[in-house]
Structures are given as structure tokens and as C-alpha cells.
Length: 199
Image 1 (cartoon, helix red, strand yellow):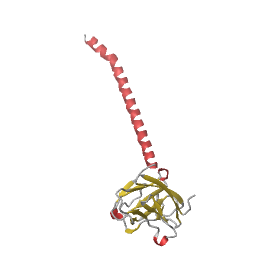
Image 2 (cartoon, helix red, strand yellow; image 1 turned 120 degrees about the horizontal axis):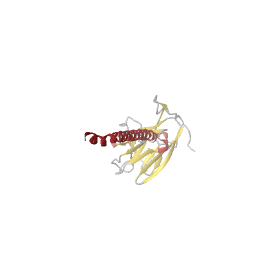
Image 3 (cartoon, one colour; image 1 turned 45 degrees about the vertical axis):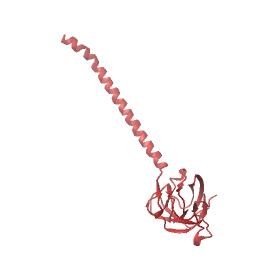
């Protein structure tokens, strides 16, 4: 009787081992797939990484008339964008400054002015295909480089503007950077030639 009781269990032992091995293989395959997916996600994320922040009103460095035309740089006229932003000229002839950074090697300083009296924010972003070549920073509180900025709406009269210091961070000394502006449900792309003229 003992042998008979034992005999049914003996054929099942190899089956248990086979099932165990099969489970282990499946776990190994799943682990490899997860690792590959994670690695792929990291590469994709770095290529189109979005770094953004909100620029509050308190980071404005000055008030000015709006639309702003360029102050002492009147020959390099600022451009009115969507009735909400005075953006730098199409051609920024001043050479960008070396930063000493491995990623963003150059910086081109140029302020931005946003119309006062707006309830809605203004959005400025580097066109997605350019995010590995250019970054932006306006407002002094971020201490970093961003792909997109949300500039808060600030109180005041419509003929007043809030000025923000900042500019373009670049991998190359001479480029034509496309930025997307969004305000009041509308959008527009402007190009900025740093050290060269855009076609």
C-alpha cells in the first residue's frame, strides 16, 4: 500500500519541476521585457524631455510701456505676438556667450515683455523637434533651463508690460530657434536667429 501511495506521486515530480522551470523562464522573459521597455522609455524621454515651470509676476524685473519696441535697441525692433507679448527681434546679432556647460554651451541674453492686465497666462515653448538643441529661461527664480514656460497673467493697465530677464540656451553658437507662443486660445511660431539670419 505504501508503494501504491507513493507511485502516483513519483510521476508528478518531473511535471512539477517542468512547471517550475517554465515559470522561471516566463519570469526571466518578463523581466527582460520590462528592462528593455524601461531603457527604451528613458531614451525616448531624454530626446523629447519637457522641462517646464510657471513664471510668477514677482519675477518681473521692471515695468514698461506695451507694446515694447526695444528701448535703446530701437533698430532691433521687438515683435508684437498675439497682442500679448513683445518678443525679441528676428535677428539677434550679438554673439552668444559661452556658459562652460557641457549641455548648453552658449547663452543669448534677450528680455521678454508680457502685457499687463491679463487674467490668462502666456505660454512659450521650444518647438519639440528642437528641444535637444535649444532651451529657454525667463524670470529669475528658476535657475535652470526649460523647454516651456507658463508666464502668469499679472494685474495692470493694457498699455503696461512686465519685463522678464532671460534668453536662449544653445548647443551651437549660430542657430535659428523656433518658439511656439500661445495666448488667448491662439498660437504662433516665431523664429529667432542667434548669430545668423533665419531664412
